[in-house]
Image (cartoon, rainbow, N blue to C red; front, top):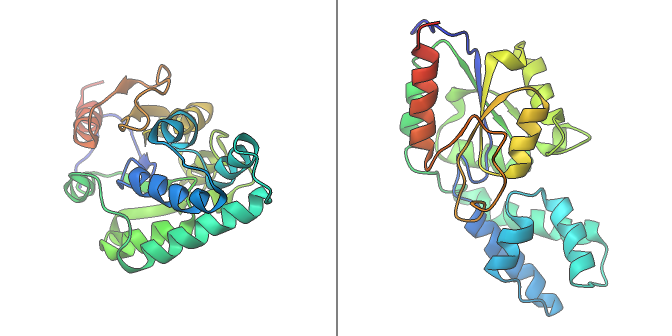
Length: 227
């Protein structure tokens, strides 16, 4: 193991849009569900209101915005079932360089975790499909906490399970909600916007990067720098 000069003990990754290229697929699934109710969801609407937002919050907004005569919980359940059916076989596709980046971090004396608002079954299916289980010491999903992102609960739980403090951690996030969750937990956050979240407010991030590769290189340089 490489001994770190700065005591970063845990690196916590968001899932959708950070480790996996899932947002375009989420958009297509929401389109598929909403067209049954006569709603044609546009990419701009998805970007403005729904990218990176937990399923139940999206469902609540859609019911109100599009005046749908169904319970938000029913719409959310339908979305989760559709996602599970699509992801069960092969998982979400990985973002570029994810496998290499995880292997690189594994050479350091640092724990890796996933902190996400996504369903744990989808995370586990994806991690298993890509044989990445060995890299992660903890996986926290929205199902594990009472308050999902942007509340800090998921990050606080991850730190508790890993036995680390906020000052021991770095977080990687691709959305404003995720950044808010990490920041509220006191964790230094690196922002990596996607095409669907590029308009979000990332002013609380330590820096904004164009790729996970760039952010990972920054983290490695940070950890290896002299005090």
